[in-house]
Image (cartoon, rainbow, N blue to C red; front, side, top):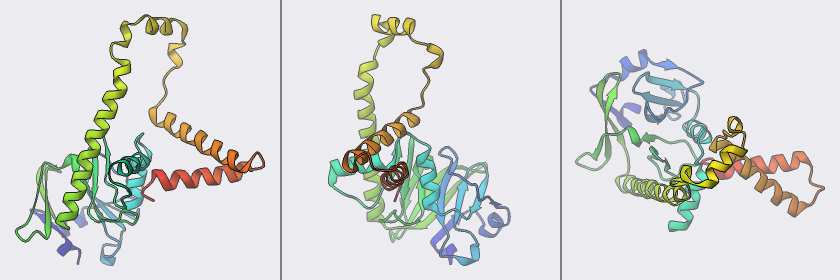
Length: 254
């Protein structure tokens, strides 16, 4: 039963489920989502995932946790491609992919994230520990519908510590990468080059989302590589199919 794998301190499962929202358009909110529970093995819940949200309470959905995570990541500039790149540079390949992007940290509770699993929105956790026999992870949250909340879930302690270490390293590496790049823009407003650019450019037409820029760069890179290998006879449909496949494989969990 799901109650044995996910224990809610000071909360009643029956009451929560009776008051739950069923939302097939549900999405992870980095500011309010606390925990994403994979329900596919529990037929009695009649949904694929449950999101615990500090504002909305329990949200039931037929989206798999994998889809929920991929939808969030696709909306952000930093994808699983960057996560895989850091993993490769640090320690080789890793099947398990915690996701970190600045102040956002999503940590899985299993070692293989290609399939749906439970995820912790760690940036909303205020404390964590394991019970005395180290079988259950205890997560503390400061707010769940106006009250403090404690969720206890079955988890492998060694694996959790490994994921936590990977996530911590990724966050600090990202901060360092940002620092290196920001050096080129330090005090840029004081330079003659910046003042000249403001005079020459159409300042009302310079906004470009970082996410849009990165996606376009990746599409151009992939399309150029395909045409280089297959020549101009590669059809537009073939180029698009391969491009979409590569992007899905690299930027998503899988």
